[in-house]
Length: 277
Length: 334
Image (tube, rainbow over all chains, first blue to last red; front, side, top):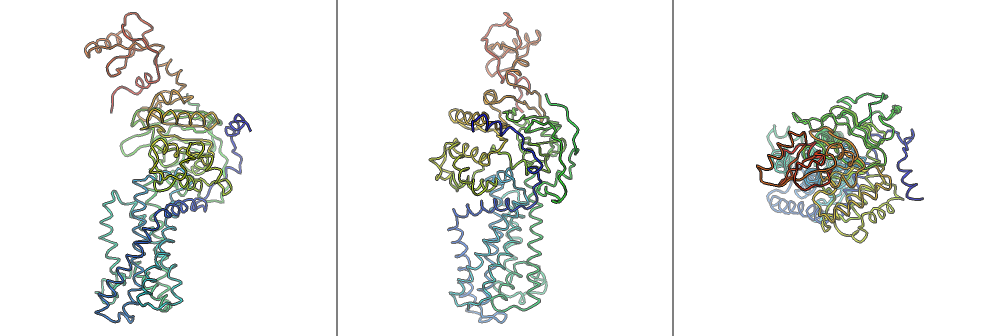
């Protein structure tokens, strides 16, 4: 084909009815594009994030396992290493899920202008947010197993229920990933994260039943703890490893699903406000 | 000049509909309403587009036409509304009023289809800096939905076009400014778009690099890609564009081919008069009395439309697009 013919072809208007079919919401092609970008980027920094995802919970395990564990032998009917070894999943969910999404989203939005580039392609904000949330969920699901594997080294008994842990951590990671994106959409500067971290995430992290059971806390803190998605994640992980307890676990699961759905819609709506002027 | 608006099937999109970008698909099963394009042979048509940010009206009733296969320049000083207009074309800015149509798709509802067929080169570099040249292209081949079989050839073609074949394995943060800009252009061309938006494509680059990019843009134009380019480098518009729209305060103040605009607004010859500030003021005064137009060019005053009057002593030169630009957008810097 000569250059002239090629030019002719491009100038021609291929606006047949078929080519003008409307594109839908949440297209697989768009989600895949967003996730491929994340995966390719991850391939350039997976070492550092795997390092922190492994070392962080290990330090918590050692500190609490030896420090606190020397004071108490059993907590809520579990040996302390069993209690902490399963509860520690919450740290990963928070660090791998919420923090990654929070900082990642803000940096991509504010400093790297990545979202400008993605939204200039056939990707809508809803697809962008959903794709990024799904990727955070996968990462959290995988990294969620790491502290448990470390705990096995420290004496946690392996059980078949552990195979469910990546899915539970992934589901919680989905909710916390969307929460991180939501927080980033509300942040004016990266310093604003301090309020969210100290005011919301740290307290939630501590009253999740990770290092000590909620039952030892005052009544009001126990009630609040029941609204903490991390608590439901920790309980579900513990029960998966040591045996499910029927309806109560269904309630934990339902809570995590609802949390993910609500945060998904909030993240989409607020990112749209932020990105589309 | 913009053609009058033709009757079409669907009216001005409401603000409510406009807000729904991101949920644009709506009910997927609704039969598609075939719309009559605003103007058949246009890649981009804007009519009466208004965009306000609080009390600031960034775009104020803009009409713009980009005919298929042409290169159109959007010229204007900083703050004239160029960037807002460019963002409106990818529906990252939703217009408050007016109509936008791109490649036959009405915005913002059908923006995603339009974006699938156009490439965008942003003003701000938004490459993934920790990735290699090739990885950047791979990611966007996915985002632009290049099919699996075409992905590799598309990346090779883009690398060749941008002259980056040897740098494919380099990380972006090791590239020069010019290379990064070429990569941005290559990235926008992966899916062989019919329309290319260039937002200040050569801003902040050395003259040599700028000329190299001009050659690339000119080549794309000769291949039939429709181009809309915003710039405030007048020379760039003069060299590359078939037509320019000059914007000021959110409006189009002049539309036409560069040489036609020069003839119309600046006349054939300019007389450049140098001298002390009082002397320059005097020249301006005389010119005003004769009905000639003037513009300050730093150390001198350019007198336009003097019809080779022998009254003036100064350097005579051919008028250029910069004369038109300054006459129409004002000398004051805001």
